[in-house]
Image (tube, rainbow, N blue to C red; front, top):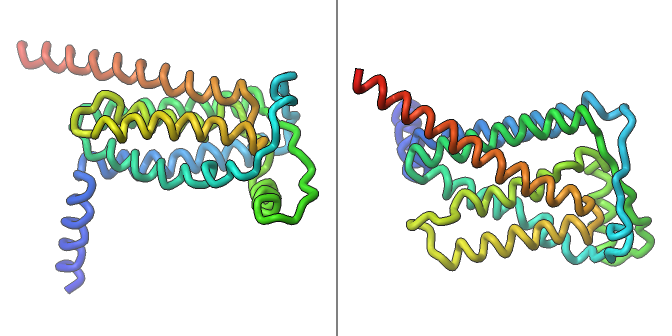
Length: 226
């Protein structure tokens, strides 16, 4: 009975995400959590640098953007599943880049811990209370590069130029990724440099993974010829 249930469950899961995409999808989530929480556990008591600029100081605090900041978790889940459903080579390229990016983040989080200055929440409206709750559960560290921006940009990279993904959704993903970046600024969760750092790391790591996949293809071709 249990074996039959597991077979049906596995068939259902692989009907959503093919088996070759399932492990990278799950592993990327676990690895992201380990990097974020692990680096915080290691460097939590270390000196943290504040890299606030004059422009950061001028940006307004708009807590209503928290709906985008929290809503991006649904966006991440949907787009990462869409990527995991693509062809094997594209899946491997994307998640290789994803893992490399977290390794880069881990190194930076430990080598150059950062923090920021958050506004004092004085109001008692729903958005003020929500911002206060966010600040209470999310310490002001692991800021550069912004993983929020990095993952959101990966959500766009992963479906960019993919023929099986409707053009309108590709455009939506780009716009939403940009809105997530904006939300990190006006909710005072990150500085501007964190945004560009996250986007840059995503793009660079995706190019690196592309080179890795090209090299593997060439080596595989040589072995077949031999």
